[in-house]
Image 1 (cartoon, rainbow, N blue to C red):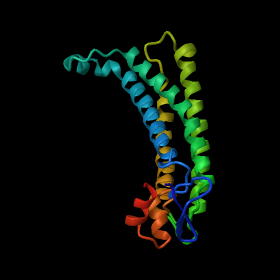
Image 2: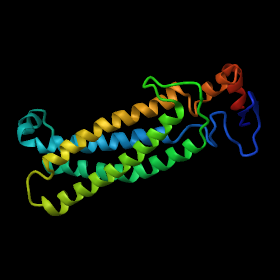
Image 3: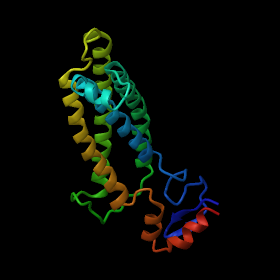
Image 4: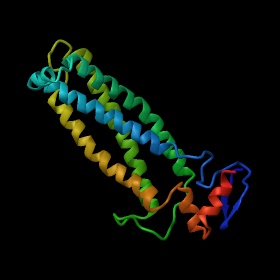
Length: 209
């Protein structure tokens, strides 16, 4: 039986919304966010390793790791391409879950922002990062297949510096998302039950029977 909060009580809803305020048990957006982060970070990291390969070649040889710069660049490219694709789903899931959110109005985050302001900035940041990741993917594709196809170093230093800059934006954006979950309890079942003045130990057990 799936239950949701209504005026401080758990009731059986018509559209089967869960205690977390979503029609499914676990929020999708946070999981896709970590996939986006992992793919993008791996893409830039492997391209950095590949760009510095002449300095690292002796280390790989000593460790008996059969690595080549072309293989490392392949990993960088395909991870970046995958990051661009998955981020569309990440942002879409994020906006869907924002539309279903019921943020508290009497709280502020450690950055001094209210729940609604945090949601707005997090949403704007998500769209911005989507655009930047797609732009980086296009940039990476031109380097791989057109501009630097016949060069030993497949990526430009400016591309790698831009990727490191996006890491900083991802940190800021991710912190805003963490505030939504950890501080405001958006789509966190236990937080919603506690704010309703109920006992999560008993109410959440009911919600999964």
